[in-house]
Image 1 (cartoon, rainbow, N blue to C red):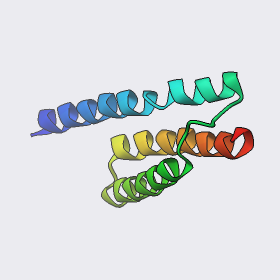
Image 2: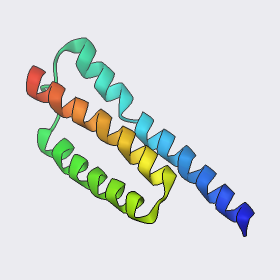
Image 3: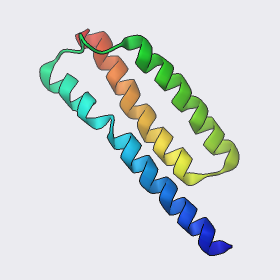
Length: 88
């Protein structure tokens, strides 16, 4: 049973790294171009709310992969929202 828990945590951490990393190219592109004209603010606000709920869910369950992935995702999403407002 312990082995299964370790495997599931490993899979969760890898999944979190991959999905969180998907936000990096968008954030870098906005920062380099100083333009976020084509980015939907509403979409990223909805995404931030959803990620906050996933983070809260992970905290309630005490699941480190959920907590880490959603914490970093939220940071990237908030930075994109800030750049959207700033560079609109």
